[in-house]
Image 1 (cartoon, rainbow, N blue to C red):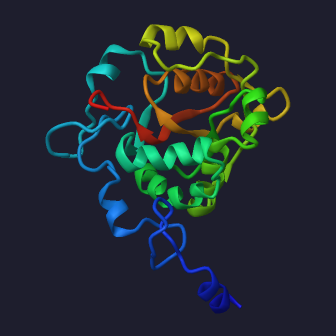
Image 2 (cartoon, rainbow, N blue to C red):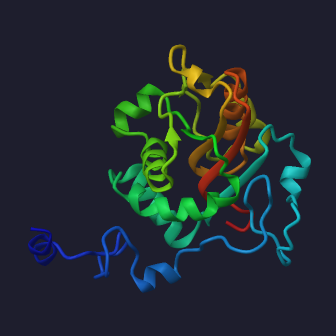
Image 3 (cartoon, one colour):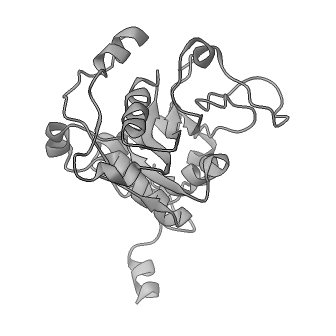
Length: 238
């Protein structure tokens, strides 16, 4: 049956529909246009940095100037070119299946963040946005990543009772102010965070304001340790 389905529906690139060898993959051309992050990165946000990675933790200027409540952070891609197109399709294009393609990229980026007690927790969205989109892209990513890594995930451990304004056009201070009180532990399911090593997951990290609010909510619920992971990182040149 699988061979018949393969003949009827041959694998295609998730970005441009060109033929591929496997399902949920990028073709060679789209892979070359996808800016995956490699080499030396900021240990708190995953921003690519100049220089060689000698194993010592280094921090970017933004993280040196901010009071990051989490311990470490990584991102799989820079938010531009084909990475941006894939994420917009996942987030706004009604293509939740793209999370399955992203899972191996996230797993590679998350390798240094994992512990024996990691619990993956996705960034929550307000119910009104969930009603409009019909799914939370971060929940889809968390489910796919947890399956890939064979670790626990808690899709409902955090809630977003406050409908925040879109961050487009806001400066850093305004983004942080917008996120004040926006994310809480779930009244009934937030107990899953207690005593655990949390890996917070979102599709895109820009200023870190959403991760800041979510991290503090995890600690309010008794989390032992929090790291953050984004599918893509907005950098100063993007």
